[in-house]
Image (cartoon, rainbow, N blue to C red):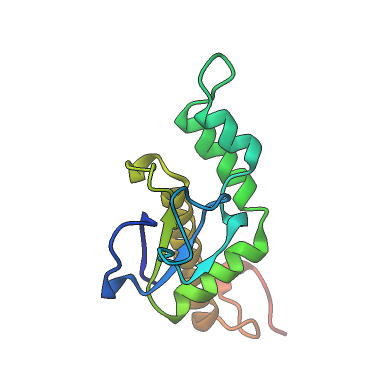
Length: 148
């Protein structure tokens, strides 16, 4: 699984594969002529409330760790978005795109989403390997299950 992340206006490269905009809002400055994405999944972005809380200044602003925690809580409930992105990534390379203002990928939801998708894929690979090694009709002895 090859998943990358960039800002929407970073130059397209052949290695990007299928480019998916994962912002709730259309990027400022983007016109139909400058769109650099193949698909837009606004529900892959943080909720308007979470976005506002993170980018707000003042006493009700939240920090990166709280934002990350809450975004993970939101995105893991959006099963259809995760299924779509997983399906795309299984077909070939994808690049998750975000706002041009997200200069630091370490503090952007696109990286949290990338890490989540890669983790999900790794856990599925482990599950499939275990399933292939131990078919349901012949459970390993350490499970305590009996076949007869």
